[in-house]
Image 1 (cartoon, rainbow over the protein chains, first blue to last red):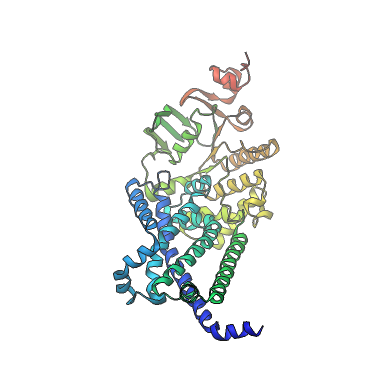
Image 2: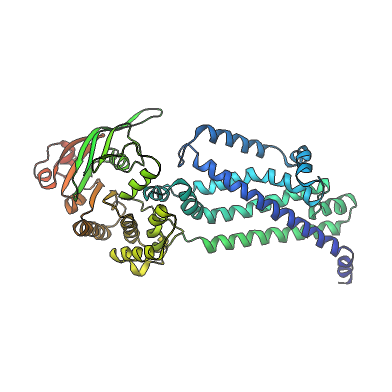
Length: 223
Length: 248
């Protein structure tokens, strides 16, 4: 017991700061990714061959761009966009420095998740909305997105947990956060107890994210 | 009055499908008009060409003297409310209550739902016997109730025409009877023209005044229901009437 309290006395503030940094990276970059990703997902869905407004060229080009974005391993993307990151936030390290590459890497992923959720909405409900004389923006805002919302929320948990993994990778370039602590203390300095403490925190974080998103999705889903 | 003039619809692709092949029909105002045919005859394509969910490849759709075939944008959306539609699969939004579904046409038309709109929508729900289910979600309703919500939504479009695409095909006999009776009453009381797409002669017999028989994208027979039933000319009509056995 005393060893536990001495552990927290020594590393408590470090782990607390790491957790806070991780949460900031996680939620800020996921939020930005969803703002852009929902837009891209809607465009992908609406312009698809059997979508509301098929546009073959736009759909194909956007599809390629999204696929390219998803192809680049995060660690490579992270270092290759340093100039852009520096121009945007003035630094390439710390929590701030890692948010642009995280957004860049997560957005294509979110776009595909949202596209998938929108594609699951039954076609006849959307046709009925069309038959009521709704415009395409109206259908998207008042029918497509609300119908897909429970599925989109379930996707948020998958995205958050994937981004959590990215934030740990970002730790390798000094981004801070739990992943950074695990690498610096657990790996480089063989401090197993710090490694285990970060892992426990990350496991709890994953469980909380998953349970919360599941609960919200269940609450808002009326099917 | 709706006039279809030499309507053709060809689906491009690997092998071309001529879903409609020179269809000409006149549907008088106030009528309950049946379009009957076996699966794949082109019935759904025909009705979807009426509200332009499908664009005809050639030919014209003339409604109350106006050629609507090439309508676009706001004019097209306005026209679509003029010819409301109900679907075999109901087409209700699962995440909205019955009342919110019935309010959708107002949202589509003006971008908002006013208190008066809501009152009117409640009136339509009452009209279809579901005033007490206004707050229910589609998953909490039976098939027949869902279709009645869809009818209330169609009424909220203030239509002059209601298109029914196999509207009772997914329903049990009791719900079918209830929905058909409702459609007939609405036709009698409001004078709205109803166009019924079906593969069931029973449905035609129950509510239609006139009928056209569609075979492989062509109208092979049309006339009053009494005439066609008494003296069917085409083989498929006789099959549909059960006057010709398929088991010979």
